[in-house]
Image 1 (tube, rainbow, N blue to C red):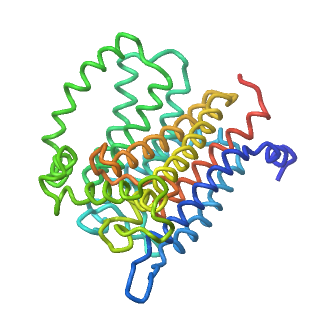
Image 2 (cartoon, rainbow, N blue to C red):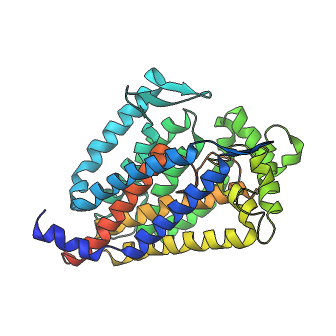
Length: 371
């Protein structure tokens, strides 16, 4: 490691790293409880939290790798990674592995690769590269070309079907577009056109996705079917009241009423056990975490680094907003996990790697001046 490389590690953003560690620790503790099943002889705990610790260790290695090199080298990798990601997404319908009715994985022997997770990173790099090349607000032609590049992988992901991840790819890119800015007349036009066009997507949704939206509007119409997830989640969070039922004290989770309690609805377990007070603390930690990401984007010494950090900000912001809104019945169920809280191998590794990239941007702002 060169003297310059050693020097940058003196400028690690310990606030951001500490907040990330706190969220991961909360997530593992919550997964320990979410993995529990109450029996006559006590509480039997499955091994989801142990697997999460393993994924976390792998994520730390990935984070260290993404902190070690100059992030500006990723500028040249944007297009090749985007092309490879598209090829992998095209291969999923042909040679993909089907799990629970969804074909999203490629079996590579030693592990299963989920190209949709790679698509998030590819769109982050490509969006940051394209949008950081100029500071002028986007015109219609530029906006159409950028969003068109995001629409290709998003449609392939939605086709799998994976509506949540497909939405995240577009929302991440949309956040970067807003960070760059669009012409005022174009922004006003989009504010009018987007609400008019959105209802047309109803006709391309699958039947189960339509049922989820209808269940969101009125869960009581199908309490044992499409509305079951939302109703049980609302019951779990509401039953926590002010201070919760205590660790391992939840009934909706421990008695298996709450579905997907270790993945998409993990925060409902947290809300039942720690109540309004605990949810307020968790949300405060997430807000502080997002604030630190915004500070890195603001203070970055070059446009590319600023857009990378901003992209990671939107990546986490949308997941937090959608998952918490979904768990509390404020949004339809779309299968978006809560970062660091929900169980998930590939998602956990990606989260750590993206934080390593932001820490990279934060450290190296001391080494060069804006050109």
